[in-house]
Structure formats: structure tokens, C-alpha cells
Image 1: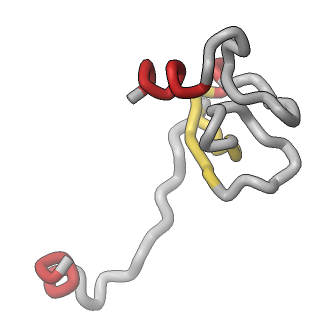
Image 2: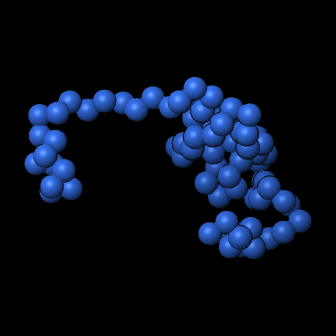
Image 3: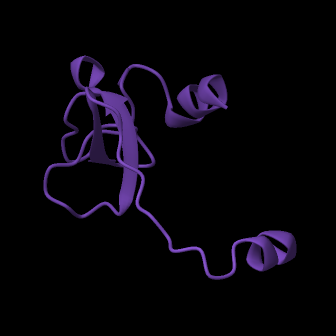
Length: 76
């Protein structure tokens, strides 16, 4: 950060625009499912055709038959 701060001093910040077909959606960080109500402050980017499903209250994983720790361990 020290180096970047010196090198970029005076350079205006610009917002990056996602490429065509990529959309930003709010997700529940615990489940990875979309949240439409806007409660989540976690934003991820997906291809439009590959959006995760919308979560339901109480949903803890995409595969409800497996405990959340097992799903988490497979992801990370």
C-alpha cells in the first residue's frame, strides 16, 4: 500500500465496469444463495446465465441433505 500510494498519488480513481454478460448480485455468505431482499452486503459477480438460485429463509446449503460444515469444507 505504501508503494501504490506513492505511485498513484494524483491519479483519479475509476470504477471498474464488469464485462457484458457479468452481473453483480447480493448473496448470503453462509449459503452462497442469492438474496433479493437486500439484507446482504456481500456482492459477487456471476455470468448472467450462471446465477445461483435464490435462497429461502432457513436455507443453509445448496444441498440441504448435507450439513453446512461439509459443504463449507468442500468449497474451501
